[in-house]
Image 1 (cartoon, rainbow, N blue to C red):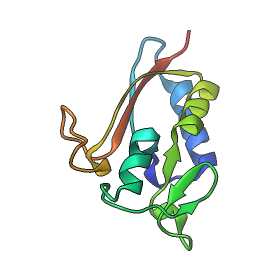
Image 2 (tube, one colour):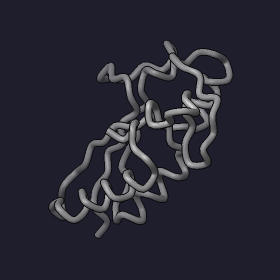
Image 3 (cartoon, rainbow, N blue to C red):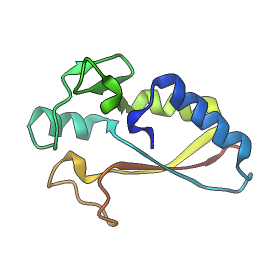
Length: 118
């Protein structure tokens, strides 16, 4: 869901989800996350794409239309979740990172599981 949004749209989406979720709920959202593992796979040519354009909070492969693929930096995502009132419970890395990145559900994108902070 968050792979084609501007940073402001990501923040607003998380705030909207927070306002409408139950206090004991869990959220599952898809992202493409730039972290140490994905940086390695990108630099080694193992991922399914290259992301040569750095727009500060995210990387993309299209300078003309960055929303084609927004791959957010982990520290930016963590701050967005915290500011929206969520605790990140887990991050499941997706197979977009390359063949060596397997996951139990065989999902392509990275998945963040979160819950409201109390």
